[in-house]
Amino acid sequence: MLADVLEKPATVENPLREVSKIRSRVTDAVEDGVRSASQAIRHGRYAAEDAMEKTKHTVKQRPLQAMGTVFAAGILAGTFLTWIGFGRR
Image: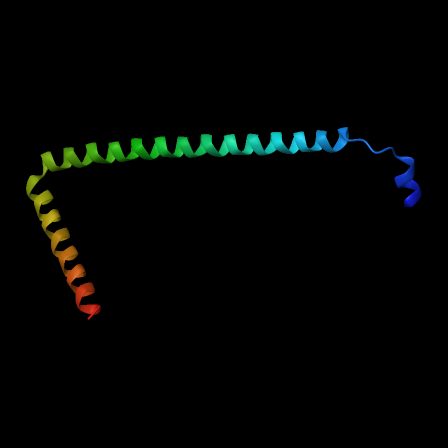
């Protein structure tokens, strides 16, 4: 093993080349991650906009049902918050 080390001349080029390859791979991975994250955000925004449009349409078509749903959600939220408030005492 010592003979192998002595036979090969020490060069700086090989480690620098390896570091350059690693840096390139890491850069590509980070760029892919950023691209994927921005695409997911864009898709999420489009889905939220679609949901808002569907909700507006449903409220226009069935206003009494929408009011009842909001009323029930308010009662549930108030009950839950009251229950949590009394639980801390």
